[in-house]
Image (cartoon, rainbow, N blue to C red; front, side):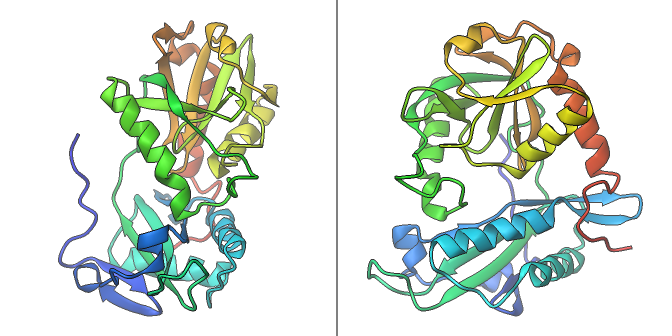
Length: 300
């Protein structure tokens, strides 16, 4: 796999109210985020559309970022509209169109197990293809579980929440698979490390209910598409046995977009991907994100 180059000598990032060269930006080795994982982030896609630059569901992403910070009792001096505007300026300064945007809030030096006094705000962007490629993934069932809400705030995109996700992905690749599906604490399927899971059976879609999953923004959009198509979406417990009955399956996420699953633990999906509901939804998704249907703001 080709290594992603996130910046070059000319790349500019936003850091604490200033525009700085990425190569010159410094982070303290004593940051509380580096040691304890206290921080929050988002991932947002930008797309070039016929009328300008589209930030996909930016309002929803920045609202979730602020909600994640609220969970951590962290405040930053920016609201959703200001973060939107900063992001658009960032893309302009770096001459980026089809890009991935990463807002990150991280903490100052503090080795105590209490919230640090000051938070830093960084926003960067780079060109990035679909996180898991174009699809036809072979998936394994992970030995790692998603936490429940009583363990961690699972709907917040917190820096420390992603350790188990990385471990699950590493485990999957070591076994020769493309990605993993993680369980909840009751042994039911929850989600992939960085994406939500959908299963198709008898013309209906099934996706894990809220509890241990990240309630993804792309997940919600895909469910809206399905409703427009009069396809029933069942939010419920997804057992391992349901994999044997699946006609098709796919993953959704901002970085992932919408990607097909070929097999789970060697069990092949019954339908060819082009014949599936997921394929139809993927076509609608790709059309709409590149034609302004879900823009937050555009640069004409």
